[in-house]
Image (cartoon, rainbow over all chains, first blue to last red; front, side, top):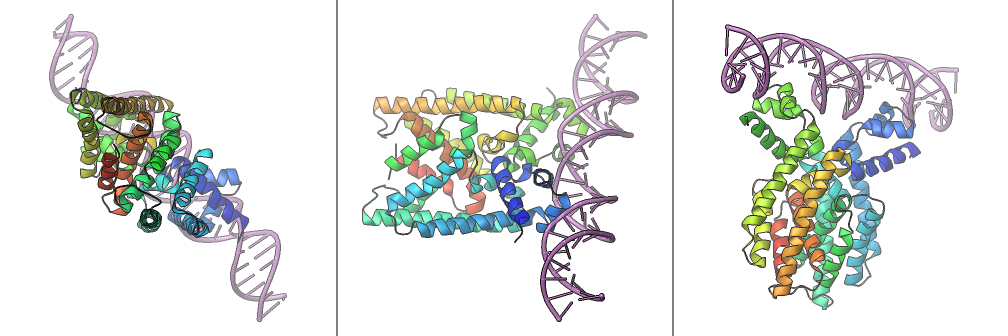
Length: 182
Length: 182
DNA sequence: AAATATACTTACTAGTAGGTAAGTAAGCAA
DNA sequence: TTGCTTACTTACCTACTAGTAAGTATATTT
């Protein structure tokens, strides 16, 4: 694979997670990389192809992470999951679901489909970890695992969105709230 | 005031909350309202003027709601607050913070400022309600009021974003999680 | 009756969007 | 050495973006 392809993918992902899918253009990619607009189209014929490639790459990364964490205790798995968001925050980047989910209605159908798939994967992984922790007695939360999973995913996602607005460490507050409640 | 001005405001707000600030244009407003592009510019010279007017109107609505709820018990105030999100979900609309916050970095400075102001108002109102409920013994959550406030705001905000993706009632799950934890 | 304000329309601009057709230089394969 | 593939560039297209200058019909004020 060419370096250019990877460079495009990396920059596009950064732009999407900084500004959103509808707020970046092929020009925002071609100019910094010092290539022509058409060169971006050579690697990714349409903007949707680029978007899909980014989502698929992220799905792979998450699957790899989940596998890596497989032998950890449930609490440590949750902490590792929250760690993804902390790493994003350190780079002033949103998570990919927060970046793309917002624009879901305006996304090409093919992108909507892979995004929904990615969302379902993360959600059911988290539900599984919470379920396991509850059965093993490591966790003692009262609601159902899917309810707790939704609380965690939603609050993490928005923490990254609200950071630039509140200028306060919302993520740290939310992290504490969640860990207390497990 | 003209009806057209209000019509523009209403439609623009709907579009922003459906698709985001960067995914609607003056054409999306002028065509359905059967007026010319320049008529929209007559009422709102720049897109930022339109955006600011929408945020200011929402700030007023929230201030009015908060006043209306003033004599309610803390738990009922929280439920009323969650009710705003439930009403949004029924209309398949995001909350204005979820709709605009996402695009914060790409927003004109003047819009960023009023948005930050609106965010701070909601956040401190919620913190106050939680504080009051904790002191009065109505609530028994362990974390600080601001931590709980951030958990509630963030999870509500994303619930509306994730609804079309998961096709599941994330908001109901999150609502239950939160009410249990108070 | 004349002046002014309101609420537009007509007609335009410069810039950007995503996308494409055709050409090219370099490397590899038969 | 001819042909094919890869990775581009040049040059272009149509559609749309926010925004503006100038004109107009109607209503209100003086």
